[in-house]
Length: 285
Image 1: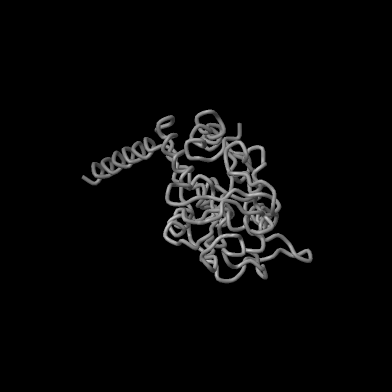
Image 2 (image 1 turned 60 degrees about the horizontal axis):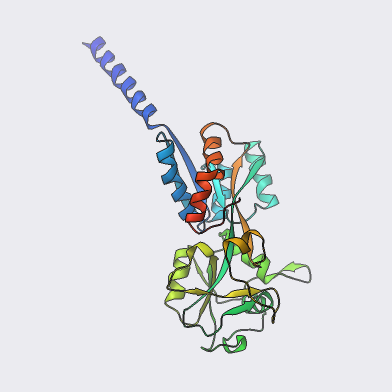
């Protein structure tokens, strides 16, 4: 009886292994909240191409995804900002491998306002004075509009979008990075930013252009006050005539291999890039 029971257990284990094998590969993707809708769409579409490969896409912010690469809890990191030198060094120290950067699409960071906003464009110079600590612009009247004090809405500091906007809009003073002014409402994800702007007539916010809907409007942006403003679009993001354009990335530890390489090749290929456009981001080609 004991021998038979042992054989039954072995058979069950073998069946379990077979079942596990049928489940195939699971690729963990973590990082940018700006890219989460895109990463999810890639995963859903790739399931139809490779049914035995599952993409588990979660957000949390670019910084969170980069940290997950370091501690080995994700296979790929989606990031809306370039990895920092010190982050890459920590990953190499932890894993023994270099971080590899993959540019997967482009984006334009839009400046969102409520549909009732009386102005239609703003300059980088003005945005710096609105958002940066010590800036001199605090009311809509100072920008030629109306509504009193500007209610600033942004992202949390683990967001790549937060870092990108801070670096490119707040800029530097006396060689040091200027910080955001106090009193900004910092929200977890881009969808929350858009919802808040839609419900706040005095709001100004920043987020990827792919989150635009009929509940908000965006402002044209110029480099200098008095110059014609440029609207965020596929063309202006790719040729960088829109002043707040950026690349979006996937990072891996070492050169990708096997199923991960196949997935990234697909993302960069025609099918993956068609989804980029569908999700209102800008294809690489």
